[in-house]
Image 1 (cartoon, rainbow, N blue to C red):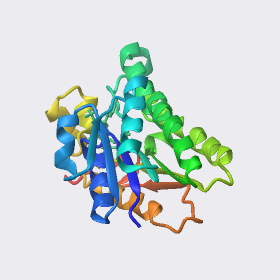
Image 2 (tube, rainbow, N blue to C red; image 1 turned 90 degrees about the horizontal axis):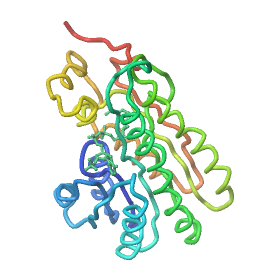
Image 3 (cartoon, rainbow, N blue to C red; image 1 turned 90 degrees about the vertical axis):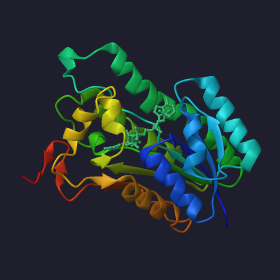
Length: 245
Ligand SMILES: NC(=O)c1ccc[n+]([C@@H]2O[C@H](COP(=O)([O-])OP(=O)(O)OC[C@H]3O[C@@H](n4cnc5c(N)ncnc54)[C@H](OP(=O)(O)O)[C@@H]3O)[C@@H](O)[C@H]2O)c1
């Protein structure tokens, strides 16, 4: 049966791959991102709408428009997120910290709080959160990004408790290194620096993560996968990576 799947941050990387994977199995897609012009090329015929998860009125309009277009939301993929910089805490800036917390934590909450009531009013649904290995293990220069991803764990736990008995599934898909635009964004557009992150390593690709999201979403309704931690074979922790010479 075709489901209504909402993907935040669908203009690139993991979000775009998730959108394409759901679309390939016949689901109806609502896609949001700030670079809305990119979205029609991600999935032909998907409902595309501007979304800035850090702007409450943008979130409100996006969720309302998605429901108006495709009806009740069955699956929400909370993917929009970013890291900014690799400064140690003592050298960090409030601007970068706020951007990460506002996007990765508060933005996710703003979207989810508007979607959950729609799900529970319509017999249930599935909230997928794209977390990170960074939420499980901290690393030098990643303190605030790690905090923003660690914060998603109690949010997911609380949502499972708060929706118990209402057929809502909550799954966190937590990847290690994935080759997307993530590092370009982290390094403020410095593509050479971003390339170094993946030098000599075979990272995950966005489709590897989308496979995990789809696997969780395609379990029978009584099965909830709480957390999928998925890493490249060449990565043992955020900063422990095997690189070919
Ligand atoms: N790549 C990795 O190694 C890795 C590892 C673990 C977890 N993750 C997580 O995976 C998720 C997706 O990242 P990615 O690797 O696919 O990076 P990406 O290629 O840079 O994609 C990030 C997406 O998030 C969207 N986004 C950022 N800020 C937004 C905002 N304020 N409102 C709406 N959308 C916003 C971007 O769209 P616009 O710029 O068009 O708005 C873009 O579509 C993130 O949550 C990231 O933390 C990534």
